[in-house]
Each structure stands twice: as structure tokens, then as C-alpha cells.
Length: 309
Image 1 (cartoon, rainbow, N blue to C red):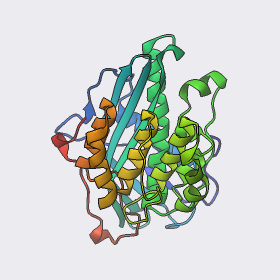
Image 2: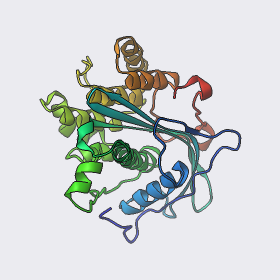
Image 3: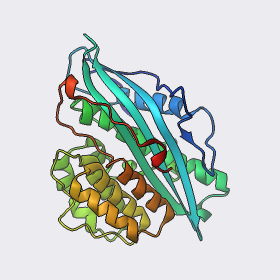
Image 4: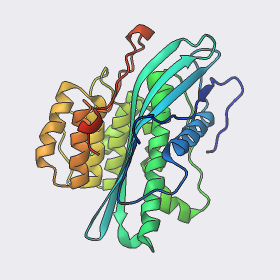
């Protein structure tokens, strides 16, 4: 990250992510990620991302965030010469003011990321899957930090660009949030998405359409107007469709969830069909951004064994 915590910035103490005592939240997949375990990786990465942002506003003493990992899944698939990966992480979080430990927000944060590309871009398949894991993890962690800081705590922020060791590292591990529209997505600002992302939804370049839809996704929430347009024409490119589905799911209204249910019947890509079914089972991926009194801050949980993966 290019920025450190500024003097006088609002602090967020992100506590180590705990694991449930009853079950293992890590869903087995075709590719096994290298140690350390996902909860440790997420803890370190989210904490570092929050520290790197210049957060302002909120309680003068800052906040404490405590989360439990409900689910982590890295799903992979290959089709002819291409490969794709989808990453899921569900965190059940409680956020408190540091000064008096008053509950500020409680609920489920659902991080989702996708990447893909030609298999011949990598020397070995293991290298490819590890690069895909790095891309999706980076995107998801940065978006979870936005959900915490902006969506739940309503803080102002400055997001720095991600630094890469060299051009090869950037080529291998850069995700959608390292694109020119990445800052728009990580702002979570509907006005910025309307201004900068909406015009790119009809770009001739699939990657640009995908990053634009991801910016729409990050600006969407159940208590805000849908900004994705009256009719959502599903893209021919599976990579772009994932972010369209993500945007509809994060909005989570009756209308957008109906679009997801209809899409299940038409989708022919296995990982995307799995993603759609999972999003419908959890009634979307978003959470209300309006400030709620602690008594109204109810915990939202996933649907356990009814969701897939």
C-alpha cells in the first residue's frame, strides 16, 4: 500500500478473525491454498488495508471490529484453454466504539471476487491458481475494508493505489480494483459510480465492462436506488456477467433478486450458476447502509448447508 495511517485519522482496531467451534468454515476445493489459514490471511490483509487508508469522521476514539469466519471457499473451473476462479468469504462482524464499547453495527459481510484468463499465460497450473487466488483475495479484502469503513461505519476515506514489485508481478496478480475504475469501486460512492462507471458499461472492452459493473456493485445497497439501468442485458462474456450478478445481489431488492432467479435458468457456466444460487439463498449480498440503533442491529447469518458452495 502506498499510504500509512495519518495523524488524527480515525482508527479501526480489526481484531483477529475467529473460527466457529463446531464446524470448519473452509470449503474444500480442487486447489488447496498455501498456508497460513484463510482467517489469518484475512485478518492481516484487512487490518493492513484499513491502516493504509486515511479514515476520517465517526467517533473520535475510533472503533473495534470483531469478526468470525462463517465460510471461505475458492472455486475453480477450466473450459478449453481458459480458467476461472471465484472466491467467497462470509464474515459475521460486530463493530463497537472504542471509548465505551457501544455496539455500532452488527451483521454479515459477504466478500466475493472472480478472475480468469487463458491457461497458457502461466508456466504451471499451480502458479495460475495461486495468482488467481492472489488477485481475488486482493480485490475482496479491499472491498471488505470499504464495506467496514464506508458501508457500516460511514467514514470518509482516501484509498491509495496498490504497489507492485515489478511489471510481471502486476501482470500476474492485478485484480479489477487495480484498474482505472478501482478507486471508484473502493469509494463505494453511488455518485462516483454514476459519473465514471455507468458510461463504461457499454464499452467494447470486456475488462472495462467488468470493472464498471464491479463499481456499480460496490455502490449498491438495499436502501439505495438501483443505478444499473432499467433493463439489465446480460453480457455474453462470463467474466462480465459475474460482476453484473454481483451488482444485482449487492443491491438485494425484490426486483434485482428476481433478475437473479431468472438468470439461474439461463446461465450455462457452472461456477456462475453456483454463484447465482448461493446469492439467492442468502437474499443477496448487501447490507443496509442507513445508520441503525444498536437494538435494531440484528445479526444476519448465511443459510448453512442450504448454500453452495
